[in-house]
Length: 80
Image (cartoon, rainbow, N blue to C red):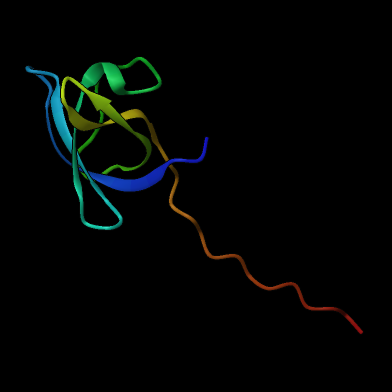
């Protein structure tokens, strides 16, 4: 999946509504049914990948998937 990256900045589990702030600063609303793993819940602060969707006359985040933080990798040095 290509998509965009962002962070979940709000999520009301009772209502199933939340917002993702994209890397460009744009805020994208979403409904819990847009969480790709089917769990219908996601933590505030989670880093995610998502697809922009035009839905109900507005832009929303869809196909929301949590992504793991990228960890630093030690450079490989030759034993020469």
